[in-house]
Length: 94
Image (tube, rainbow, N blue to C red):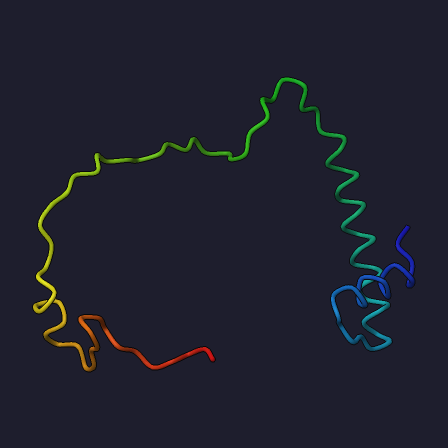
């Protein structure tokens, strides 16, 4: 059973400021979520293999082969601003 105190605790942890109607709504919604989780516990999963994904995953890798790349001057040719052979961008952090 979810109580108002539970919702208040979660609100404090998440730094949320709730109105009175929010406490009522969230208490009801969290209670419904827990009922749904309890319902899921009824599902028979005895013959189901544990998995991290429901679709088969396969790593697609390629051989790492060195190849010629752009010449630095060509790569920087259309740069609006450059400095010491690098793209120069506006500072975003102090």
